[in-house]
Length: 312
Image (cartoon, rainbow, N blue to C red; front, side, top):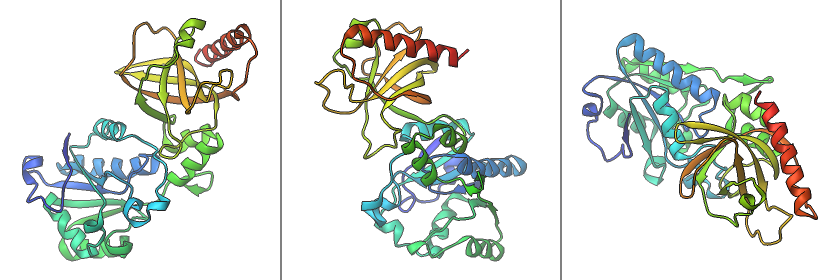
């Protein structure tokens, strides 16, 4: 997959696709949920049907970063995971550009003119897609431009879940409330966070349950409530089952920031400095303060046994 990080200051991009015209999926794609993947999937179908290259145009940052900085939502997906999932979806060209003042000030007509650098034959978007200065461009205008200028425009209806459109906003709300099943249903996958494994106090190793520690930030990343969860952890290409504690570990009074501590079943080795992806599968219990280490060890053992039953 070829990645382009600048569109406005780039020339003709035909060489990026070997001279083959493209079909472009358009969207913020800030979670790559089922609705987003429906748009990208339809664009992929069109590409195969017409012998075109599949391109995706999206943004490195959320548009609110410039439009309304105080309202920038929590992230649902890391940049690395976004790239990996788009590559797995068969995207040939990813135009992953910053949403900045220069882009925001483009008129709808100029926005489409910039897209011409991609030599597209078709544009695919969701029914709520808007573009150009203050979002003045909409799907009706885009379809009209297509009829006039000789390219196809495919507008996908919004997918629904429980009678309402699937949206990143709903997913964030359900994650915050601990409704992991609903979030997973709308994402099309278990919700996960990605991070670098940091060295902690190594208490888990002393207790017989070594953990991989990921520092987390609720201001920047969507997170479920504090507590103990059944989890999967991807290390490279391998998926491990495990149990994780998200929070401040109240049994000890020396934890100064929220951390996700995950014990991986059947794993041997050192993960310090490695980037891993931790997926929340099911909530087990709230965090607890234990008065003895023996009580803590007994409860961790119970959690582990329940998690292993979950994966049977």
